Picture 1: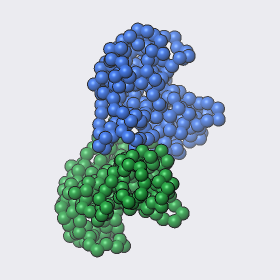
Picture 2 (picture 1 turned 90 degrees about the horizontal axis):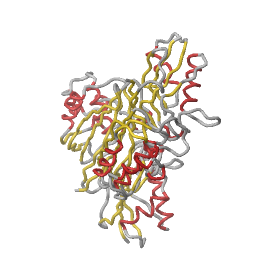
Picture 3 (picture 1 turned 90 degrees about the vertical axis):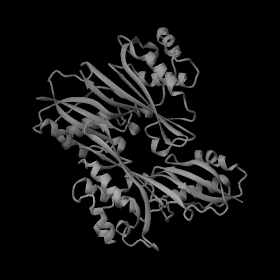
Picture 4 (picture 1 turned 120 degrees about the vertical axis):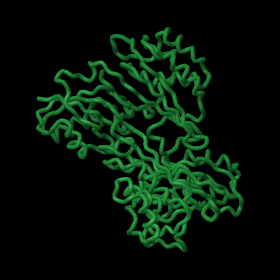
Length: 250
Length: 250
């Protein structure tokens, strides 16, 4: 018996998220079905991040146990031709028998894309949130700086989520802007942390946008954190702009 | 009667190219149908570049004549909500009555994307050509330098194309490479010119790749140009990597 670690990329557009649910397509169910068929075993993967419906990934992580004689680093090559083209195993390797992708210390990086301008460009539409107006990038960056650190992020957690603690550590928040066409820009917000609450990155981005559009001064983020109340923070921005860039195990 | 100039962006994945053909979806037919319905006139656009099936655009140009009372710069806003989300009018304005998008001097810029690495990333699959191996970027750039200039590009024109002359002027060829993930790179080839033959950009890229993989030394491009024979040049790379970035009228 070997434990295999997969790095998985997907375009989440047509999936109801990572986690198996009856009657709907999910990343986890496609992986389980395809791995079970190709390795001729009953395979059940454990995912590091149970991304929401419509969220994308370049580097989610999943593990499973197998008796297959296929060398660990060749499993990706054996399985990829049988996956739909919106899911790919980036790499496969053997992991320690006790490695668990959610209970080992890690650093996760998410990227959120916003496209601004008079319309949503067809080539951006699957991977970007669209805003007609252009927020102030410096104000967004300043707001993001207040997010960095170890805080109680209760204000940035979807109401009703069941967690033991809402304290998390955010390691960095960076904002960049590039021009796609005259009058059309793309904003990339990169957030790294040791763990995130449900919808936390999307609420952070929604809150930074409030600062970017001058609704709040950037330092108001401190008050939002201290208030420990979801209604104080900004909106949860749409899933399609979000991509789990990668997970680094420490 | 006013002549209106549109700048048009599209994801060409599901279209059989720009030009109207019976029974199949094309960009031109969607624009004609939608403009005719919204402006309540029989509209027939004339496109600057009749892109092939599967090719994308951020800035193709089309013109049409209309009696509509909608101000020229508002036509994009009136029409966009009625277009499918893979076609958008980036901007609209009034043009001179004798402006013709194909017979006026212009500079066109195309971008071609190649993603390298062990598999085609799901989020790149609609807009990139995939190659498992990584070509030498400096050799590709060197080969591209031989393309720049006014030459007879008969070797770079799809066989059977009907044109008066195969002489064209290429203004610049640039190659950049960026890392998407460890082991996964994206190569962007940007080609600008005063006009292109049928499949010319895709054959230029296929030829540069031969130099990038060491099949030919970069200077062999001179021999290919001098030979005036399509069979001397590289393959026509797939349509999905190609995007018409923009057209500048001089």
